[in-house]
Amino acid sequence: MDWNSRFAQRTALMQRSTVRELLKLAAQPGIISFAAGLPPAEFFPAQEFRAATDDVLRSHPERALQYGETAGEAELRDWIAERSSRAGCPVRHENVLITTGSQQALDLIGRVFLDPGDVVLVENPTYLAALTAWRPYGAVFSPVAMDRHGLCVSELEARENEPAKLLYCIPNFQNPTGVTLQASRRRQLIAWSDRTGVPVIEDNPYGELRYEGEASPHLLDLAGGNLDGDQSRAQVIHLGTFSKTLAPGLRLGWVIAPRAVIDKFTLAKQSMDLHTSTLCQHIALELGRSGVLETHLPRLRQVCGERRDAMLEALEHYMPAGLSWSRPAGGMFLFVRLLEEVNATALLSRALAHGVAFVPGEDFHAAGGGQNALRLNFTGIPVEQIREGVRRLSVAMAEAS
Image 1 (spheres, rainbow, N blue to C red):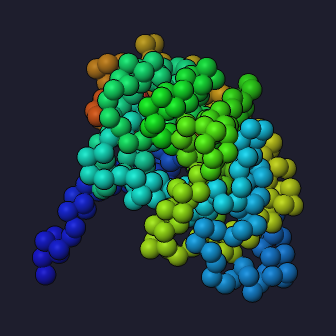
Image 2 (image 1 turned 60 degrees about the horizontal axis):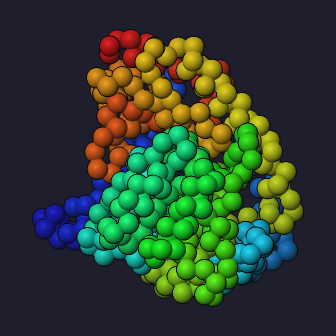
């Protein structure tokens, strides 16, 4: 059987995830991996998970183990809606869809919105897995420059006549750069969306991992108005997840959007997995209602903030002159700019030989570029390993120069 002749044409657009492939290498003994976006596993609230699971299975096993609604358990949607509502921007459970991880939300966006040739405006660089999700649908990515204040909205305004189906951004502690979109630019972006009618996808996996400074309003909040009414023409679809705050193994994310969008996502999801794990939804709801999440977050922020500080200190100590890197106020990543002549992909081979892994920056650039950049994760590794990993990286750099 010639299976290649049987595959759908869109499979030719599928690409392996560099991060997923690097995880195989990083799993080797002795490797210090800055590659994957891992939260600190040793601080997962395992005991609280056990207690919540016991409570759920003791009090209502028939509901937690049964098939559920495609859109998600009503009580969890209510809880997320209440937690997400702001003055001037009420969210109801009809505006919430529970997904199997936030990554499923990205795939749903592709299924529902994107036809071959549709243009998606993205930050440059941008989240690798969003590109991976939308390429098979034939999306054409149009990069928009970033600086230390986030997406350059002025560039969007200069290109206002260019056709686009969607704009995708991560305003808080962006992946891969760690940069946060400035508050004034958030208002500019909503005004741009209002004028052009281009929906904004606001991906917010890291927003609750802030280590310093004051939080800016979500784009969803700034758009304001009733999600199902006519008070605001700005269109924002907001994505969230429990993967960074509770545990990635839950595979629980959510979408907040107007009801018309949620209804279409629900139809698309029915053909994917019928519904997200009912048991996991009830466990997450128990952890939320009992206050475990709110108790866990301060400790998580402290640990991750200490690891960020350790990485910044190690970079200052070990990195050669001429390099620069972002200084994120939160999140899980920072981005390193190497000397122009240094290729990060070639550097990775030397780094692995010295027992340290990272993700080359090229993969985050939708239209090329980033060969002299790399992404480092600081949350998944203890402080002492961070220092040693950066030292190893500096040795690899010295050999490559």
